[in-house]
Length: 105
Image 1 (tube, helix red, strand yellow):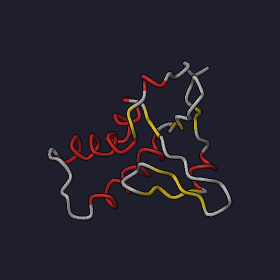
Image 2 (image 1 turned 60 degrees about the vertical axis):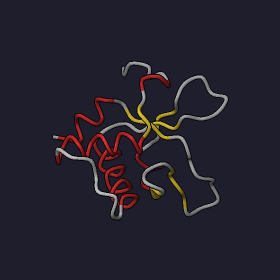
Image 3 (image 1 turned 30 degrees about the vertical axis):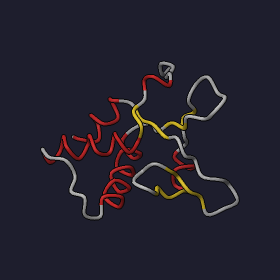
């Protein structure tokens, strides 16, 4: 059984993507095409660890399923997950430090 994750355990996905870039390349990501770079790193984080939606009015974050992530597209530098169906975007997304560590390997 996985330990329960609290909101304070999570790092916002755009920040996590920047941290991953800096850890792997030893520098901050360049501003050129920054949003696209961060979107790509968001996919890397989603492939290697759990991604959580932080929903207003909910006490605990909700883990996004692999199917849910596969049905969406990260946008705006990993800040949002948009869907092609009638669902609205998920706008508050986070990952754990462990997810960043796994993605950097």
